[in-house]
Length: 561
Ligand SMILES: [Cu+2]
Image (cartoon, rainbow, N blue to C red; front, top):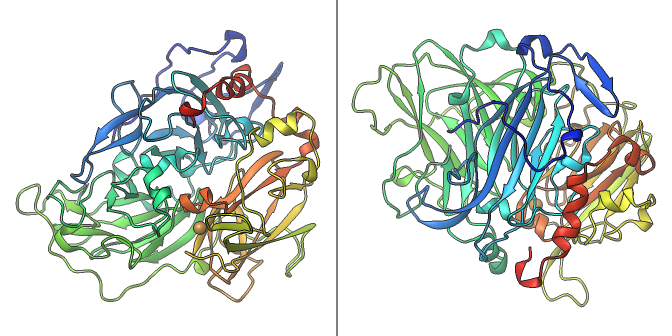
């Protein structure tokens, strides 16, 4: 996996007055101290590091599974788009200036783009959340946009992906790791670097437009582990090899970069001790099988204490979707001990554990400050919002769609943030009509997500701008207010109920949506507009952001999106 160098490059396409002096100190000084210097309109985190990176979005022919297709990729130069995208790393407290340049030309896929930094809260920088038509207009071809944000109080495993239509299915997905020098779990593992990031992706031979046009259940052609994998009946292309040394403990950072398919993850002969979920440290929990849903992440410690050999890494797509087996090593990677006998490309013949200990989300406990905000009973919040999902053909419509409280989310022409900055503050004034819910500031919010007849579940729901406490998961009939799992993607089953709690401490419009990307495209989303009155003051936008909509709106119809 390529890693972006954290060098300080000259920055282009942004007025010089916009950024403050970059202050650099050793990473350890910046971490966790939270010393802030307010200098004019700029807030500079003293001792933090600034990562100035150039990201280029390009079309490239790629055959990660042996089947060649045109893709949409990210690269650190205009010529080296890669899958997965370059690993972006930083340390808690750091600032990121990520300049995205769109060089897309292939009209069989979207040529505009925007990038969401999944799981990072974007406090005071809602404009940098990267959601097309919620927090920005898309970046159009041959233009650039600078995402400039800080990560003052988060560490863990994250990722980035396109948030325009279903473009990320075409390849625009990459990992982010925010390290914490004071990680409370640091004594539990020996190795945690770019070699321990494990991305799991569904991969399609059809373009995203073709996937939508088919309107069929999502059937991935291949599962890619760190960008490598095979498809059923395809050639024996190389599998991903994860190298370990006997006796060491590895912090593997599992990232589902799925467009929709979920995967049963396991490594033959080895336990996995979960220590982090979606950027939230957990009490260690040892399992050997994790069902990984779209956009979820887990840090797991693997102790390389088995006989030095090669072991199969398994990522089995949900039954009935794609090739749900391991024939010819589809859905597989390799865990290889340094002293394993045989040639370097030897494939494992190991068997899956027969004593499966599968993760039950209800067993996960936050390590720090466990407990949901609000009172310990259903409805014990300042505001309760009920959202019921649905699926069907609306009167007058030609195709089925998803609903949230009977409304199908359709992207507005003007981003919700721009509407708010233009003075619209009430839900009834904000578009898309019926899809925007306003929330008051500094209140405990409880959201009941009712699955209704929303088919194709479970639906992994993601809230931007927050992690939430899942006081009732889809798989339990009990509530837990004392120490429920805290994360940013959780499941809602068809006809099920999931209840989450969070505090509105982050003004701005935040997307709440199913992370099965074609479901989002078919309307399974709402916008939670937090504290619309103060958003303008709290979330100032740079000039480059204000230019996005006029440029996008000047595209001709054959250039959209
Ligand atoms: Cu869904």
